[in-house]
Amino acid sequence: MFVVFGATGQTGSVVADTLLEKKLPVRVVLRLAQSATAKHPDKAADAWQAKGADVAFADVIDADAITKALDGAIAVYAMNPPAYQAADMFTVAKNIGAAYVEAIARSNVQKVVLLSSVGSQHASGTGNIMTTHFLENIFGGLTIPVTCLRAAYFMENWNGVAAVAAAKGILPSFLQPLERPIPMVAAKDIGRTAVEALTEDWTGKRIIELHGAADYSPNDVAAAFAAALKRDVQAVALPESEWQATIVGFGASPEAANAWCEMLRGFNSGYIVFESNGIETRKGQTTIEAFAAETVKAQNLI
Image (cartoon, rainbow, N blue to C red):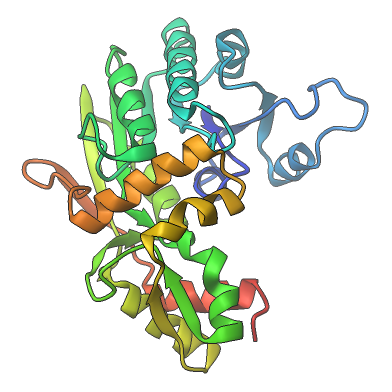
């Protein structure tokens, strides 16, 4: 049994779907929006069961519930659900990591793939990426094989400004300078690579750095949306003085927004990069042009 956490999210859903396409036994773990014994099960549970997946319910800070969800599991995809509304996302991440590890240690799980991030090698200065730094270290205490899948900057981070590009012909960018390319990867490539890792055999702890099909600058992203929207689109640097309020406007707590700002400064300064030397690297297949076209279609922007 392959157990997938975060199955309603961007990467976990791809992991579960891809495993099911391979005719492998899958259990998705959903949050306790409703109990597993509720008269009207969660719609997400119905959808996954219709696809052929088993469904379990657990809060990822509840080691006992996670242990039950891992019954019969041989492999696990684990990730840290975003806690952007929390005042202290770092303590939340540490508690989640501790619950995961306690439950996995109690189980017969044979291997784990943990979603991590570019920059997770650093112990400071990376903002919310510190959550995956903490999880990597916590999972490092397990005695079974663990893969830390360090993903590049998510292409999906551009989803929130696609409508602005369509309406106004500008693409607001936290990433600066606008001409500097960085690794960007699509969530579906993260999920597919996680499945590759889950179905492989390895020993000890390994790190996989996941790049995209190519590195892209904000100008490249704007050009991709221009092609998809069939109109001119120009990338525009969002002043740092506006970052905090903008991110709070997305629904983040002030503390989480501070962490996001630190992360963005880390990307823009070149501090947050892949280690590369001596570490396995893989590449996704989704180009920024394909991503922009899919986003425009999904959001009905033309």
